[in-house]
Length: 230
Image (spheres, helix red, strand yellow):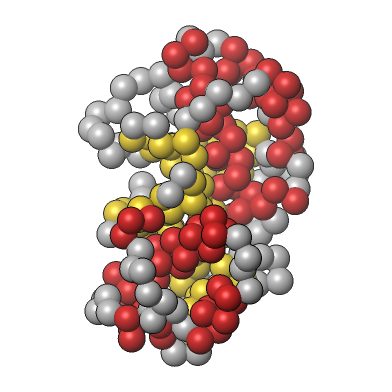
């Protein structure tokens, strides 16, 4: 299965809202806090740009306003074009003024996450990571430890999004096995494989990538190839 992705920065989002649908614009008006509004607009902008690229549509306000992202009852994003459901699945994530959107064929399970590499305490690891994950992080050098903890956390988020439950489910129910965590990347945008294992025997396959202080993960079913950038 092919997965595509696009990342955008807050500075790339237009000042006006004419690229939002009527429903989206009304929802935006209900948001009280500036940071929440900015993050929501950034996520919608990134998703609409990704979907327009995937569908071969022009990137203008009228076209983007016809692309709409609505939440399902679980909160996962669902895509529409001209008020009709599209045959695509998307996942969204944002962090520190950046957002990522992953796109896959409809009917597939898909989750993506964007994180900034930062320190996570021993108490955090004990609460949210399995014993095996904590042991893997314990083997890392001081330099790699924060990166590896961020990777495992991000992959958990992606896997739980792919199940449609997000962090409503205990993060200890999924065990992450990332590959090649201590090897240098062959090239700056290299994606490396990971697996997310669940107690009932289900496994999701995915990928992870790091550039600078940002780390991205995707998890999906059927097993995807390395994500392709728009």
